[in-house]
Length: 220
View 1 (cartoon, rainbow, N blue to C red):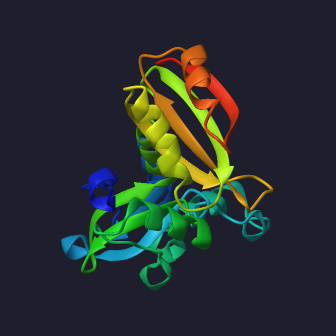
View 2: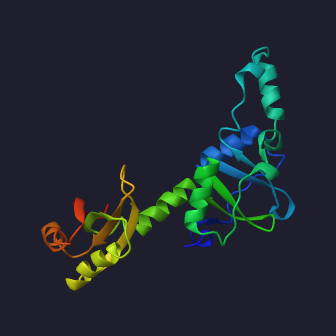
View 3: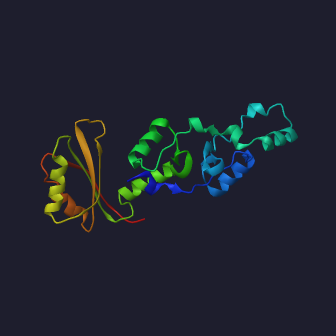
């Protein structure tokens, strides 16, 4: 799963001379929170966010309404954008999980995707959440069960073997360290075409593992 497969291709762009009033209107109309600023050949010059378009009220306190209007109309995105050297970016071959890690570590809500210095895409927190939905088969009716197991080699294989022994398939599988217990691991498994009672009966007997949550999910 790579960025190229989940990014928005040919994203909306702003030119450096676009006024901040036009940028605010454009972003509201298009329902976007991040707008790359590009020059000739879609070369990245910077990034505008809704927060960057907010003007410090202290700078306007001494101005009358006409001066405020004149002041705001004179500002362009190049005056308020994050400069290209400071924009956190990625490329098309980055894995989805690495892109998510970058966004979390850098505390940013989007990553312009570059080829060379040319903007070829955009990936955002919303894209990441949509990817998580697909990974976990959110739209597929299934039984979702969380199994807590020791974090030792072979435990996940034992769980999968117990499911395979029933002749069942797995539609989604994910894992994470157990909350507040670094010695345990939680595996989340989704199984189709079975009832909750059938799944509990089959997996409750997996030695050394515990069912901590089980529920039937339905398509939205």
